Image (cartoon, rainbow over all chains, first blue to last red; front, side, top):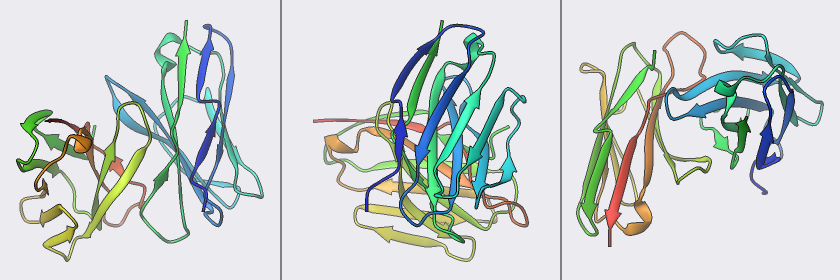
Length: 112
Length: 112
């Protein structure tokens, strides 16, 4: 099976802009989670989607949003970008009912 | 705050030596997982140990769990240069969502 894919891999934006990141999970995986990784804060959970519904949410402002489509592909959007949003954004998928997560390579976002 | 915290933050060893890293957590858990991350890439799942297990092996990896001390250790035997990576423990919360909470990681460097 193909692994989790994320697009784009690298992105440069300026403050105030918005960005949309995409994640395609492993075929058959219905749960998709998003994480933000920074040197200062480590890996922080953003949200999880299952069957097109947001099932869990981390402590991030409303500027961070996401959605999941019927084919389980997911997107996350960050509006009004701030310098502190520069990070590696990781997507992970897992089969229903399993705790193990399979991560994509990440999208590295730089906000200038 | 992070649920799991790895120790040490950084570890530097020679090829062939064993590497031991520890994880401490705060609340009761259902399971604990270890992941590896090569520089700037996605995480790779290594091993999952459930709260009713005390030890688990996978190849050169040995994981122990002491729920009374709320701690786990990951031992990598006969380390190789390719083991150079960051290692994270991830815990869920008993009675809560199974979304894993990651520590800040141990950075392991194996010198050839």
